[in-house]
Image 1: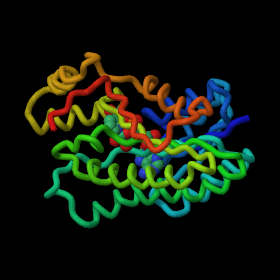
Image 2 (image 1 turned 90 degrees about the vertical axis):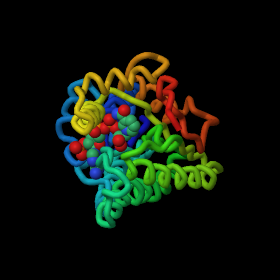
Image 3 (image 1 turned 90 degrees about the horizontal axis):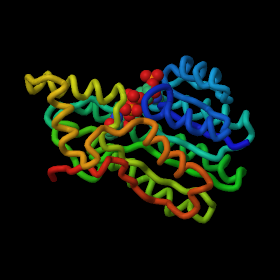
Image 4 (image 1 turned 60 degrees about the horizontal axis):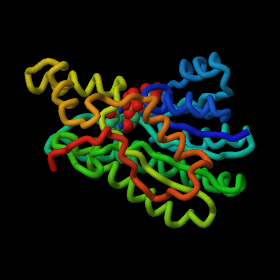
Length: 251
Ligand SMILES: NC(=O)c1ccc[n+]([C@@H]2O[C@H](COP(=O)([O-])OP(=O)(O)OC[C@H]3O[C@@H](n4cnc5c(N)ncnc54)[C@H](OP(=O)(O)O)[C@@H]3O)[C@@H](O)[C@H]2O)c1
């Protein structure tokens, strides 16, 4: 039996990946600050899942996640994910907020990957995917935390890919464009409030810039991620894969 660890997996894209891997027969270690409902849903669907509650930024969380994976005896796949940072412009973010989100988006995920490497080695290799954003390639005004910290994570992961490839650990990041999750509904409401327009207008403007003419679904993201996390991916590492419907960005 293959084993997957997924952080930020109680909702949105993370949960969709958990379901997708569950359907492929993986045993799942599901983390978020409260994964209890997600674990119950996965079990109801017949999948083997254990929850590890904890903020990815907190030092003890990674150790408890690893213990749960060790309980299954091996590790094959690791999804690094969490909720998005606040939508704030450059001048609105002070030192404290930079530090907090650096812990969530860079230190926490890298700590977990580092701790997982010995178990990957004992399992004969593994696959790692982090969920980043299209803004790594095209920084977008008004979301400086995301623009900066995701770029830091992606470059650290690229380094890990270069160093761990010979041990059979393949490390990639995926960059969603606009995927319909609660995060996007919240984003549209916030953007609408700032501009004094309706959320529907914001959504229509977004869709106008997507050649496929619609938002993506969490299941479509999960399909791409599940491939990168599986042994079917034999030769892709160190990449940032855009899953964005061909999104046209201004810069
Ligand atoms: N949706 C999009 O179109 C889009 C586009 C570009 C980038 N992204 C980014 O992709 C990531 C996933 O997006 P999504 O739309 O699937 O998000 P989402 O629906 O908000 O789900 C986020 C998940 O992460 C968990 N989480 C939040 N903070 C956490 C923390 N500190 N430690 C551990 N788990 C945490 C949440 O559960 P708990 O509340 O239980 O912790 C939830 O399961 C986010 O970083 C988002 O900014 C999304």
